[in-house]
Length: 391
Image 1 (tube, rainbow, N blue to C red):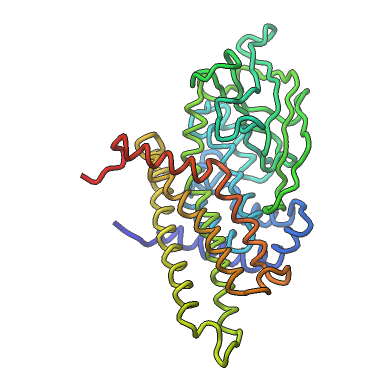
Image 2 (cartoon, rainbow, N blue to C red; image 1 turned 45 degrees about the vertical axis):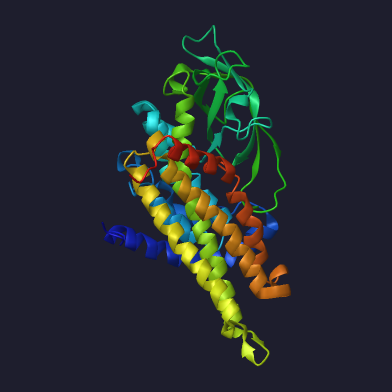
């Protein structure tokens, strides 16, 4: 059991840390205020080879895996969760293709992501089907004029990066619309340029403003047979894809918590009150200590989960460990950002400091890709089913 990063991952961490400090930190507040996509940072990530971290070398990536991507995201998220989300989007939509895609699909769609010539997004949620995935109404019906092909109709909601994407991984009902059977949902690769594919409204968000979130509207979209991911009736693929993403989302939480605590610590060490610095007071020290403990615990959970995911261990029996990482790290982000605001007092509530941005950004992490309550349910199910047991 080795708790040190490999030499390669250590070098990656150091490289991304410099990029985050030199390129991301100076842009973070402007990205949040303007709410526009930071194409300049995308180019920085592209030139540094960070867009292909989780993509195997056979398809143009570096093969650093989920652990490598988590390490990179942790560094970037210290300053901007919008920038960290850009890196996350190299894995979320490509995950189903990596897990169950054909060799032709991998050769066609993965190299562009790694090279930064294409971007992708992930379409699962709908207005009435968030945590209740089986409630989706986007429909896929066989195309009579295209053997094995499908026609898709429906609207996907809350899709991160929907405007910038060149293609989408989209899930749709391929049997009776009211069916709640797991074999009633199938995954498709849908290209932005196809007829009937349109971006609907974009959302006005509380935080993580630099990467847009919005609707994908599908109207009689013809999808060829070769763009079906895995088997028809592959709902399990959606769950496997999300399971593998847990440590990546967790890394966003760890980085945010680290950035917030470091900033607040430097502030209280320099702020005088009652003849001392604020950092001299034991009550303040205890809060800093508790948050530091939580950060290190979250990192251990997350790195273990990332290693499991890289080993292909994201099936049911490993879900509790993956969900623990996502739950603990994202809830920690909320606590740490709240603590940072509190330590700065009135100043922390003002736009003069980034603490209010971390505070707004943090909450998103407890909702996306499985809410905290969903994660708790999965962890509890693991204990009840003895997948997580200590005897």
